[in-house]
Each structure stands twice: as C-alpha cells, then as structure tokens.
Length: 294
Image 1 (cartoon, one colour):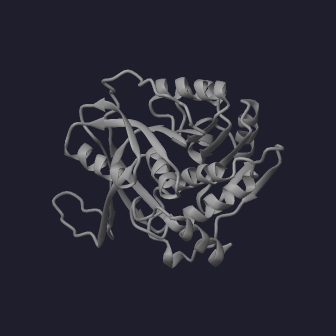
Image 2 (cartoon, rainbow, N blue to C red):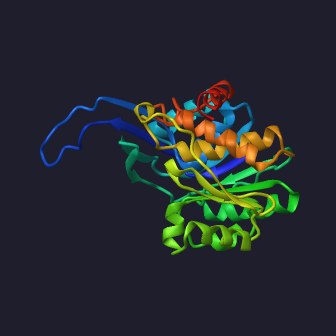
Image 3 (cartoon, rainbow, N blue to C red):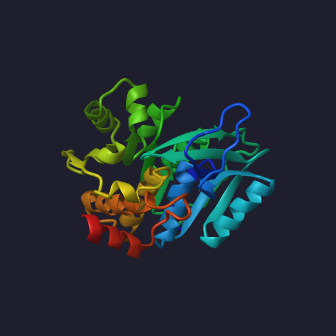
C-alpha cells in the first residue's frame, strides 16, 4: 500500500432543506446524498480517487450500514482493516449558506485490539485522532521507519500532545485553537514546538495559515469559487488532507507549498458537490479547479 489511514467510519446522510421541522411538523428536502464519512476515512477515499493504493483501519459493524460501507470501499479499491463495533455510526448533515450543521450518533467501543499490520511499502500515515491506541502505536512505528506521519487535528483529545510528538505534518481546525485557547499564530508555534515539520490551521473560506519546511509562516488563501456554486462544504477539509497526501506521494521530494496548492484545488471541487462521494476529485478535476480559479 502507498498510504494507511486510521479513523472512525460514519455513514453520512446529507440533506439540502430550507429548514428543519420542529415538533410534529413535516418537511421535504430538496436533495440528499448518502456516502461514506469520517475525517480520515474520507481523506483515504480521496487519496484513492487520486490514484494511490490506500488502506483503512477503521470501525466496522456487522449490520446493513457496515455492508454498504464495504461496497463503497470495494468500488474505490480501498482495503479495510476493521475494528469491530456493535453498530455503525451515522452523521446527518445540513449544508446551508456555506456552513453545515451536523448531528452524529457514534459507536466507538471497539471490540478488537489494534490490528498488527505489515508496514512494508507504506509511505504515508494519516490520523484523525480516533482510535487513540492505534493512532499512537502506528505514529511511533512509522516515525521509526521514516514514514511520513500526518494528523487532521479536528479537536482536542487526551493524547493530542503526546501524539503530536510523532507527527510530521499537522493541519488542525480552528476548533482545536479555541479548545486550547490559542490564536492561529500561537497554534503554529505550538506545532513547531512539538517537532512538526510543516503545519497549519485550516480556516474555511479564509484558507490556511501555515508554516513550511523552513518554518516560514504564510497564508494560502482559498480559491475564489463563486458563492452560487458552493453546495456542500462538509468533507472539504477531509479531501484537503487526502489530496495533500496524494501530492506528497506523487512528489515526495516536492515542496509543501505545491502539495497544499494541489489540496486547495481538490477541496474547491468538493464544495461544489453534494456529499463526500460526489465530491471526490479525480486528477483532471483538480487541474480544472487550478485552471479556473488559481
């Protein structure tokens, strides 16, 4: 495999609706999509769609939603290393005006120990903080082997500080800054102090404030996708993570400014499509976004 992703699987139900009904009210959504979900899971599917051999260590239940997920993985030739749970996890997502409300139901009571995987051929590891035991174990193992380690820091977890000590590329959400009472600039200093080689804070329509291999801080603005073309911003950050890993795998000696520019274009494709599956870009779609908006 080219890359290993470790996270939590959701089945995402994304609904376009003018309003949410209250009490005994009823309403009809304008459109909907059902897809795989979860931060590292979506990033893994994005990396696979961009042409790389991807494997996922993720939660899996023996129920009909679990079987739907396995069908999706087979379609994109993503190999699954399951950690069993009793029930599949669900996300209900309502995009509106460039934002998205999310309601989740999660089973992360894993019934299995951390699987022992052969890391031969692995060139990158991506984590989202779920499966803390597996995340730390494989971050340490990959660091020992010189394999790139990447973290999507969506929120503060008990092991975040320790885990960051084994991460090469950390791109975190503004939510983590808020939870740690840090400005975006202070967060970059913190990531540097933990030994991250590159890192940043993703800020939605403002793009990404980040530091490169030399420690230089700069802003990568989001591409100017017209507002009328923006349908669903959920999953855009996950596609961003999967795409910069794909860019790294394509050019491991390349500069991170180029990897992130590629990822920015991939996320610009995602926000113009409803649901994670429809929003997965192929290389030609990324090239189109660069031609139109960069």
